Amino acid sequence: YALQIIHDGKTYTATTTIPNITKHIDSLYWRPAPVGNPDSLVEVRVKVTDPPGFGDYSRYYTKQNSQPFFPGLNSVFDDQIIDGTTYDVQV
Image (cartoon, rainbow, N blue to C red):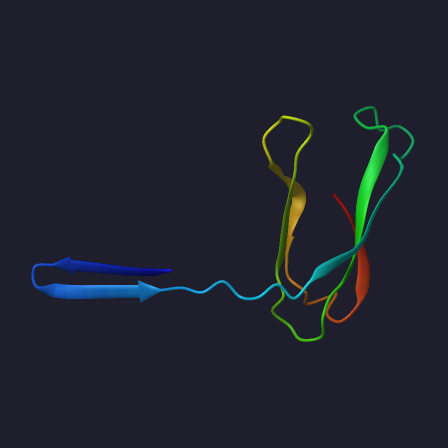
């Protein structure tokens, strides 16, 4: 989007772009929750392949039924460690 502000004869402009999505979910699956976890019956996970090249940040939100979306505990991360690999994330 673009923003233009004209104030006291001065013009201020700003623009931003949203980069193309470079990561895609390979698969979504579930498995039984770890023993001793009273809050959950299953654990939902995704498998993602990170394209080579640093700078691919990820953020995810989850929701249950009609509840609002909430970020996970580690829902924002970059690819410094996982660059160019396939990995699983609990969501």
